Length: 183
Image (cartoon, rainbow, N blue to C red):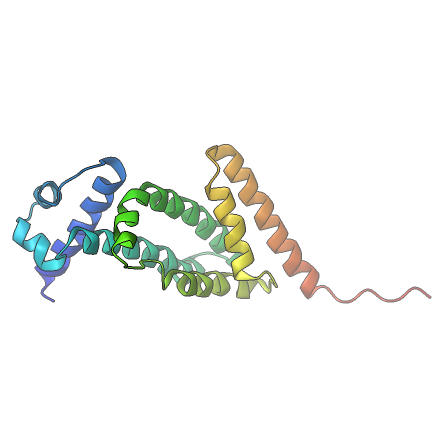
């Protein structure tokens, strides 16, 4: 794909994310106009509204999953996991904002979530492994989903602290030498 086509596609996805999360009945023409491209360019990349919605969702998922190895390169493992958990909460909020748009995609028989679980599990496992944590990735995901449904950012932060403490406690217990039997 040419550089300008890649740029236009990325810009359309970025504008569409903002539009789908803030405007109920935004038109594809309005998205193209805001992105500074013609409607033909939009349709060349995304032949249907549903294709654009699916691309927005998948792009957000990929950003979150791709962040795991990047965070491990730039942060200590504990800080990488915590930063990723914060990003997960933001991702979940975006997904919640895309709910209506995603329902239209699902109604057409398209499953935008089919690869989500495997990608997320892999990302979480990559963050847990350097900590030597036994925590199951899907258990952590279930906890994070619960936190993401909370509308209170301060409470969500405290809940993430609790989750992080649990993961770290598990890792410390796993790496601690076994206690000697009493004599």
